[in-house]
Amino acid sequence: MSRVLLWAPLGSIALLVAIFAIALLAPAPEASDPLKDEPLPALPLQDFAGPYPGFEPEDIEGPYLLNVWASWCPPCRVEHPFLMQLDAEGKPIYGIVYKDDPVDAIGFLDELGNPFTALMADPEGRAGLELGLTGAPETFLVDEAGVVRARWRGALSEPVWIRHFEDEWQAALARAAAAG
Image (tube, rainbow, N blue to C red):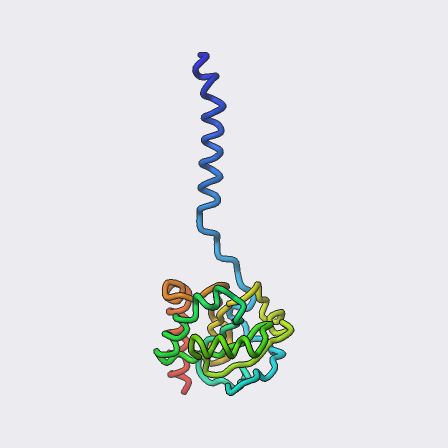
């Protein structure tokens, strides 16, 4: 009986630690995104300095990726090689330079390459507010009708693409082909 009394508190603590560990390590349920399946909102963007063409989201035809990034953002540097790969595969990527100095952003692209079809700037973060950004980078898949079909908060990578974007990308391509 005395052994049970001795080990009961330790067993209880071990059980609580196990429950907390399972709760903390379990994948979080995906929160619903208020932009998913909604038209891309109007974005108060500014022309980006430098030798890069600009864009108006409503004028883009076909599905595309909208990537919000900045030179000061370490995860943006991490995702950049994958963006270069997507560009090499012919996937159009439109970039929004988020709260960044144009000279620094141009230096970033000069150093790492430019995967963007066109660029605009969001120096004050007003477009970021419209998109509900939590930070940079964030990537949106916008279909041929201007509807947001997928979103990723954080660095885009091949596993993320396969799990969160690939099916939506293929569906958007199919809809665009059927419409056009």
